[in-house]
View 1 (cartoon, rainbow, N blue to C red):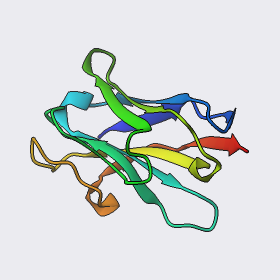
View 2: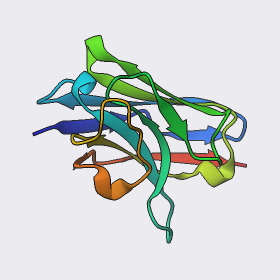
View 3: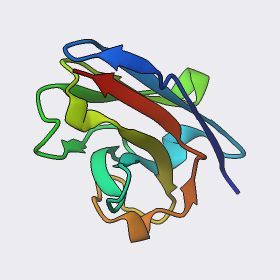
View 4: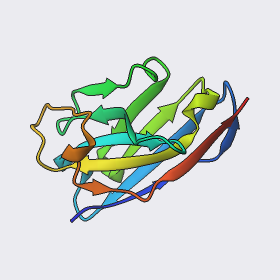
Length: 127
């Protein structure tokens, strides 16, 4: 069992930065792949970023490439999403997730491959 708790979401102006945190308990973050997803009102949950079990591979949605970075701190059992140059279209509830059955070097965009989810944190970007 893995429990994930997100934090760091808030209201920010366009062009600003935020760092979201996802702290895990029950199993260390270095033993599974992690991902960040987001869901805007009236839209489906979508992939944002992922990091492999090994920590060697990362991947990003095209809409956030060059602006967002997924970082893992094994000592703190925490996965971060550093978000820079925020845009109003980044407004959403952001969720972190854990994929326990991924390969060591795999990163996955498919939310169905994630086994545990946090409760979400709201990010609002004003124009």
